[in-house]
Length: 236
Image (cartoon, rainbow, N blue to C red; front, side, top):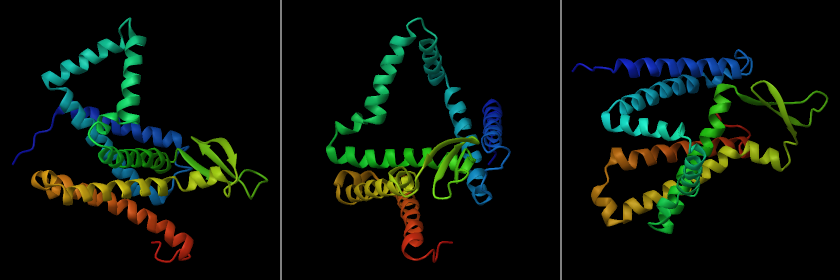
């Protein structure tokens, strides 16, 4: 079977991936602050960037979505930009931050969806800058007991690793893992007990994504458990 690729979407995907590589080189000061152990994650992220841009470009090339995109750009460059921006911001707060579109169905669904969505989004916000070498932690000069956040090579906040800020920084992904585990368990419970969900769900489309999320979150917590309670045993 011959697979035909969209040439314009292919070019956009390659340009987007190359732009990400340039940003990684700039943010990590030519890989000075890049952790070589994260190289597979970087390759996977570059490939994912290409795939997302390619799929989005193909999607927007269809007549209905092309019209939608053109109308959206007209709103952006309209004289009533600030009015439209206020509407977009209001929608963003209600639908993305608060996720009220799920809350109208049931409190159970809202908690489940909120945990999954924000657990993943916060994890992305923490993981990607670390993988790209855009931020790292080091000891400030003359203060061996303190840490300093470095962003794009520029020294930022100095904090006590044993304090509240240090606790939040170094356990951010643990919080995300806990949120995702709660969300996936709630989703599994619903899919195993709700007759309507059981009748329509498929393994590949419904259960497998939840299994992957649960596995990533659980193994992430095991790393922390190994570090704190097993002296680093089985960390690899």
